Length: 218
Ligand code: E4P
Image (cartoon, rainbow, N blue to C red):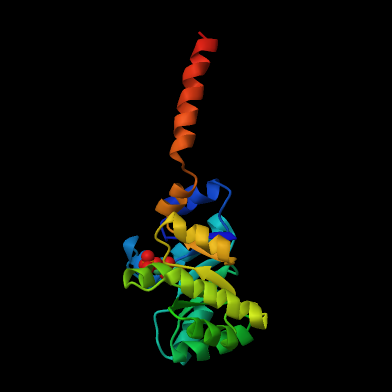
């Protein structure tokens, strides 16, 4: 399973990249705003910087809602760097934009997916990736990972090439289940990436090894 980091923070991206586990980045308008980016030019420059750091897929989201505007915006985003993947919201106008952009060879990630049928629609329209938001489903007492399992089943029934990105990840269990169900990618916040490598028995074991070594090297 590939790991993307779900952030626009350069320090977090660099740190995760240095661990050797990073396969891509996802951003969204909220994550961009969180970095204090306050105009379009700065946004595009920021996306270019991320592309140069990781040289892997970097997802940048459109903010228009009509197909024609999303297509124009998507082309502009894709022109920033060959690593850019254009995030398109899962609305009917978005499907039209995905069809057109994919026909022109521009990779798209259909975002804000909350049901298997939305995922099926996006895959049929030609999306390169779809992003089911598991944490936001869990937040309203729906089982987010159950939706992911259904999407993976459907895609394997029909051999869709669209990759499934488990998004809105809140905890290590989401990542574990994503891997168990065979998701292509999990996009993970830095805090959760940090949790994945940790285990209290590792810390206790290391403390004891280092303490015992002091008896050897006095
Ligand atoms: C990723 O593509 C999504 O934008 C992101 O995972 C949403 O996560 P959130 O529900 O924590 O905002």
